[in-house]
View 1 (tube, helix red, strand yellow):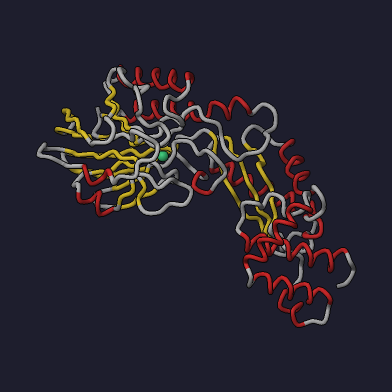
View 2 (tube, rainbow, N blue to C red; view 1 turned 90 degrees about the vertical axis):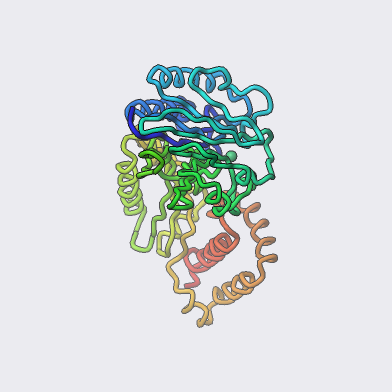
Length: 414
Ligand SMILES: [Mn+2]
């Protein structure tokens, strides 16, 4: 047994991916099994690192009792860990609150911390005693500051706190069990294994207060992109020596911006897209990459990009020719026509008057929002499609460039 443990969180096992379109044939199985395969990779990693214990910091499942497939894979993994003498410490989070019996209850080698009040368990680790403290959510919306109830106590050796919580305000995450770094530091743990925030994040250096992030990214949203996995923590006596991330995800969401300024035609665009995608795929080390592209900048290609269904057609064309490692998940554009807006503002062209209207709108967010709703509804195949989640400023700029493009590129007014 090595002087290491692993911290994982937010596994959401056997839950569907969110916010992705229809994928080409043959990928359903890979997608369906990604979270479970990541769990198997986590178990393999525990065995390879010969860890003393594994900490699961909440949201093991997407809902209270998980799924039969999820529970079955978890049981099999925990049996493998138990056979190797690796203990598991788990808490329940807001997605899988401990309202009745835990799906982990009764499995050998597993400690499930009770709800509402932190408790602890001490055992003899490889370099002396180890005490793990934790508390489960008993319901989805926990509003109490659970961190305040943690106490280190008198036991010698390493103390690890396990908590599902919101440190500060986080966009896109429920504000549950709110607490501060100060609250956590005050509990005098040697390491805080946190769950809830899906992007890996180190909140404090001494002691380390770490969000492991979700084991497998779950959607194309920014916090779910890039590498996901767990944290390997090395300790000695009552000190944490180091911690490092390990990548255990099976499917990876990535997003890139590609500027059109230097691209003269469609062939150049395709070449550039393939070149950029190849480097993303290479960095993913054999995983399936779901790639989202945003075309940016200004150039003559804008005229092509805004044609009806062009971007959707380009995406399909690229995707159909792709091999097993890459999915062209979406291609959107915020690019504009090859025009200098400042020059245009100074000119007498009709387009200058249109630009002036958009400049006015930019100063009046409410009116802009109203206009955008109308535009997005009436131009269902336009460049505005696929940008519904972008901020109003970006969408307004795209609408402006669409209008200017129609005047300058297709209307012959330039
Ligand atoms: Mn959560």
